[in-house]
Length: 200
Image (cartoon, rainbow, N blue to C red; front, side, top):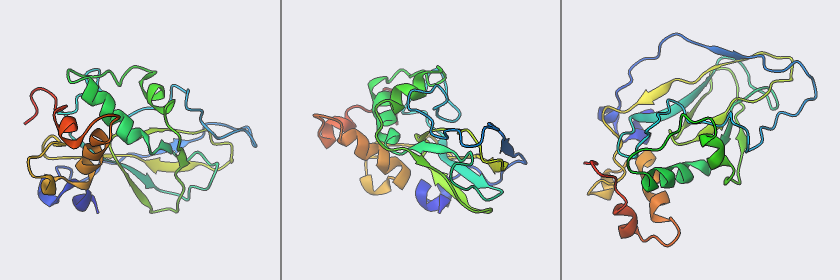
């Protein structure tokens, strides 16, 4: 599935993951709300840069690896699915780079989002997410420890959302290309002209 989403084995650089795991013990208050508001400064992109650019993206996929069962309201990662297109448009509007390290950068996106989901699953499940997916950790008032890791899958080269042959776009790249083409008032040709300087 990883190779399919990135356009083939030859485009995938990551071949192994190092040993790391994180636990969520965030709240001992049973019954406390587990919904993270879209205004919270915990919403973020992984591996952000102060000059994140559309033509310099090597993060191919974000993964969530569950080492234990993650039940509802138990500290599972929360995601904003419609953030993918919004991130793409922000980067297209800032070809010289956008600061996603800024603590409010994620919330500036999620304040425009309408859909929010909580990731749940069983031990051994692996969730593959678009690298432009804004997400956040969540409170865990369940009394259960949430064990997981979220390593990145890196591409062998920069992702190219403006390939001359659209058939060569990977599903990850295609999601961004479609979001740019669907920008208000933008035709497909106009969206392609948003290609940042230096993109090849």
